[in-house]
Length: 353
Image 1 (spheres, rainbow, N blue to C red):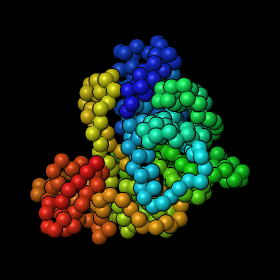
Image 2 (cartoon, helix red, strand yellow):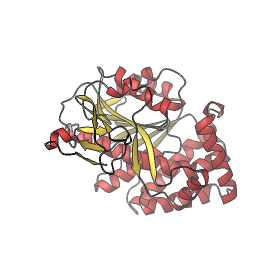
Image 3 (cartoon, rainbow, N blue to C red):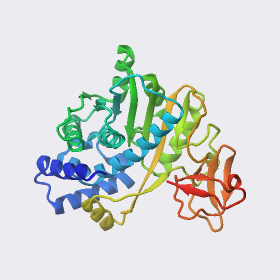
Image 4 (cartoon, one colour):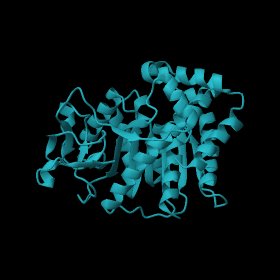
């Protein structure tokens, strides 16, 4: 994460939640962490409208979600370019659905700032939590200013509504978006995910991309795998799959597809992660990026993905030919792209993040 954005987040937390002292935040983060992992169903549907919960989320979980979003969005847009997907509008029209505090939009701004001088996108933040949306807009504008001081601000619209009615309104009005972002949204949906994603695909502009980033929990990630498989005839997956074939991991009932990335967390986030016994040097997430319909099979990068930790003398890769079992690749994490040994003339293969 850019240092300027770290400073921006810290300053925003202090300005908006000045009474949230370190001890209070530590306690609130611990309680929210427990609720996320064990008692998600007990959280109120509008938990980010509650100031103590919102400050805890902003202090600890929000920076991590920005980092996950940066990784997922970067890979998705890279694969979109490889498949010659070119949104037809400048600036990009972006819908951030279930935006919360705007982490996915802010991740996109970080990615675009790193890419060059492309104009800021036009952002639509959609969430039913009014207080969260108001803070999301202010924070997104603050992040944009931190990334490009003195530059024109992005246009940020807000819609205080749930995704389903917004999607129906968008379809009736003929709205189309070049990028649709969903960050940690599906795991909070109690209904079938497929109708939601069909509806999301309907608001994509030609060449548009949907990026879904979810927690790397087994149940959530496996449901996302099943969703990808169920929609294979209607959409083209850009990531994490390196091929357009069936998912070989679905047959492995004790495993699920997720990505691990090394990360440098902001200091206080790292401190709290260590106190809670959480990973403090890496992030995990489940990813799905897709476009509507079928596009060419041109891809870039290695043709397989690491989908297991080393298991004794072997490690599992996912490739077009299905599940490959190879000798462990040095330093390879789940989610790394890899060249199988069969394509390297019988050598052990190689991997990269």
